[in-house]
Amino acid sequence: MSDQIKYLLDETAIPKAWYNLNADFPTPMPAVLHPGTKQPAGPADFEPLFPMELILQEVATERYIEIPDPVRDVFKLWRPSPLMRARRLEQALDTPAKIYYKYEGVSPAGSHKPNTAVPQAWYNKQAGIKKLSTETGAGQWGSSLAFAGSLFGIDVTVFQVRISYDQKPYRRALMETYGARCVASPSNETECGRAILAKTPNSPGSLGMAISEAVEIAVKNPDVKYALGSVLNHVMLHQTIIGEEAIKQMEMAGDDPDVVIACAGGGSNFAGLAFPFIGLHLRGGRKRRIVAVEPAACPTLTRGKYAYDFGDTAQMTPLMKMHTLGASFMPPGFHAGGLRYHGMGPMVSHAYELGLIEAKSYHQVKCFEAGVQFARTEGIVPAPESTHAVRCAIDEALRCKAEGKSETILFNLSGHGHFDMQSYINYFEGKLVDQDYDEAELAASLAALPEVAA
Image (cartoon, rainbow, N blue to C red; front, side):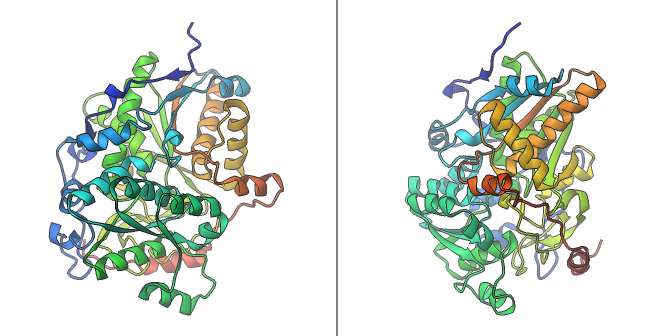
């Protein structure tokens, strides 16, 4: 029997097209609405924020969208990413399950985020844009867009959630190394930032707030466009390169996953791995269990309401039908900064509503425990976000052990934790505690959802 660990594709196998799950959904997604008229938004409504090519991808329904050659050329810096068999973890768990992981931490920025940062920067460059504004939580997205901006000569301003700005100085330094300007959010640079600080001077910030600031900069400055690292359809589209490669690599391994797992905040790395497998099922293939894993302190799928909501705190974005905790929801300052978002991407939310995926939530101490076990067996220190997927994969493997089943588990290791070591220090010193959201605040946030006629 083979004891192979790595399954590697040649550069020529980098997918030539992104996969669009919109083409295979059994029922179409709800329309995005204009926040003022509450009527379906058209391309013109997005033009202050995005170049037209990305707007067209946002509303596209064709199954495959070609990846431009200049983008594929950049992808060669790290793609195809490896598929790994976690044999040492399997042995440590004494499980009959087979555990594989797709490792996205090999990108220059250390996560899956460059998969969409590079095409977004390239499409903006083609449209003559020289400046981009964006937000970031943990800094994975901000550093990825900073990297992409450096390749295409675009100035990048990143509004980083204040608590992550303070917790992760090295991620901020990486953004600055790539040439971006990093601003702690909420800030005094925007109207919405000043309003938040006037009300809450020591606000830890949230992704919703940082999005508001970045959007405001783009809306008020015609020479600036906005870039988003998750949530929107075109971002999910770009990330499907992960799952497309994984399907080929699982075939190389002579295996096929029974369970597909990824952590989920806005949904991009989850969609990247899961959507191509969901597409196989919807086109007549076998049904797998597809599991989105989220933090218990910000449980968007497992606790949120499926409703129209704003993507940002200041309510500047179009209204999207998604699982949401409410745009005003303030999650606790737990360490998985990339998962502290009040809403789940509309495509992921729609898949959940259709019963195509499951969702689980975990507190952070159990996730870091799993991350440490993974590091001590497989050698890779996962990012705090990725530890959620590791936790779920371990639990599924232990379930297989209890049931005496030999199932195949595939999860997305979406990034490494080399810039998150303070989180691990806190864990080892016993300072990392499980945090819960305030039920009264959640109720108030959900009560304030915008009213939209059914």
